[in-house]
Structure formats: C-alpha cells, structure tokens
Image (tube, rainbow, N blue to C red):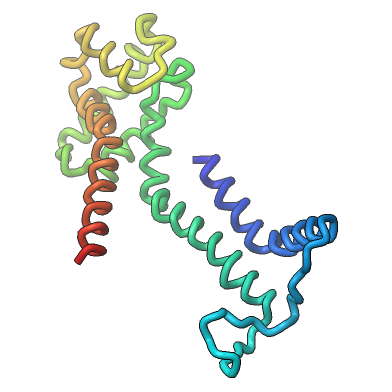
Length: 204
C-alpha cells in the first residue's frame, strides 16, 4: 500500500512537472541526431480536419494536455479504481492478522474494525463481543506459541491452527481468516465478470 501511494504521488508529480523535462530530452536527442523538430508554438492540425479547419491550440498544448496528461490521468484513474479508499483500508486492516515477523502487525482493535466494517454480515453482535474475547486469549496463546513462530502467510497460519486443533478454541478468528483468504478469489472473479461484460457490450 505504501508503494501504491508513492506511485500515485510520483505520477502526479510527473503530470505536474514532467512534460518540460521530457520535451527537453526529446529536443536534445533530435538535435544530436539532426532530426527536424516541430515548432511547438505552431497551431496544431489533427490531420483529419481540412486546411481551413485549424485549431486554436498549439502543438505544445496538444502534446502536453491531449497526449501526455491524458495518459497519466488514465493511469491514475486506474490506480484509484483498483486501490480506492475502501480497498486500501481493507488491505491495511487485514495485515493485523498476518503472522509475518512473528505477528509484529498484530492489533486487536484493527482486527475488530476489520470484522465490523467489512464482515458485519458474517458476525452477529454477540459474536463480535466474543471475537474480542478470543483475540485477547489468542494474543497470549497463539502469538507467543512456539509452533506459530516463523510463519509467513495467512494460509500457513490457517493450516497451523487446524494442525494444532486450535480452530475450536478460536472459531471466530478462524472464520475471519478464511473469509480473508477468499478475498483474492472474489476479486479475480469480479474482475473476470466485468471483463466479460465489457466484451459482450463491445460486441453488441
């Protein structure tokens, strides 16, 4: 998520200040290889319009706004779509259950917020209360248990809970982990459905 945020910031910085740098570089390459450079202050003609239908915008305006900024805006829009605020919050909260680095990200409040915000249909009000109690015991029992050290993924954690028979003691936590593990499948399925719909719409 930090990488996504930094990429968004870099793309925005490129959009704001990158065109002049790119233009200077292209100009230097053209000069070096004796390639004719288009007058950036000239009026732009799109090749489709007749000679009489000349745009008021300059060549530089076309390449800066219609091409350069448009491409970056498309990339930013795609990142915002795939990593919107809700998705980012979900991915950040789910790390609280990750066993990486001996449960260094473990946070009871974040785990409860994860269940309350995204899985409220799967947990009743009474179960939410018991989930908090289970997490208090889980922090002492599982997080510090020798058999649960050096695990790297939620899948490994899930298997270890089954192998040690702790799924019955922490059934609500186990349910939450299983729900989180289905997230990539759900996301992929949704992506495929929308891709198929787009293809059908295009064909029609």
